[in-house]
Amino acid sequence: MEHFSEQVWADSVRGTGTSENLHLLELHLSDGCKECAATMQVWEQVREIGARESAYNPPQAAVRMAKLEFVASRLYEAREVVASLAFDTLSQPLLAGVRSVAPAPARQMVYEAEGLTVDLRFDSQAQPSKVHLIGQVLDKRVPRTNLGDACVILWTDGGLPVVETTTNGLGEFTLEFANLNNLRLSIQVGRTQIRIPLSNLAPMHGMHADTGEPEIGNQ
Image (tube, rainbow, N blue to C red; front, side, top):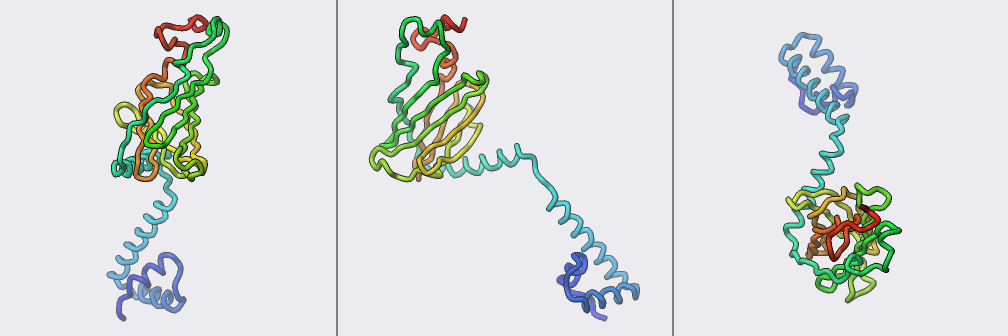
């Protein structure tokens, strides 16, 4: 009897295929064909490997980093533009006595780059070790432009991705990250990558913007 095709072997170990082929294979193996018995063992091992692979769940941290690396590779193809700071509430003087009786409010920063405006609001009052960022990308040239699915990534000063998200249809996004300095935010809109340095976030935690000294209420 002729030996069987790979399709028949695959159907056999999976329990599929026509009953006639499976019956012929069983009869052939019962006749003591050593070559086909060895082939059967190989296909059984293939089936077991496939079953283990389908049940395998890689660590979420590894999946996240792989996705970030993939997104980062696409950013290298974009034209990079460094945004300029247009507004920062930290540079606005507070009323006399306010610093001594209340914690620093959420900090707002507005950046501009080639007709695009990026509005950022940082808040860490609920959990000082974390920063909650709410942002929005707007096109001043075409106010109602759909800026959804723009890639937003926060980076360390060493170029490692920290967290990533995408904007909604209104250009809005949120991020939460550890309270660190010397971070960098990148937002890719089309083929333009907006780069925003976030090198002085620490002053939002009780540091006076002009003197760099601790404020009265935070000593």
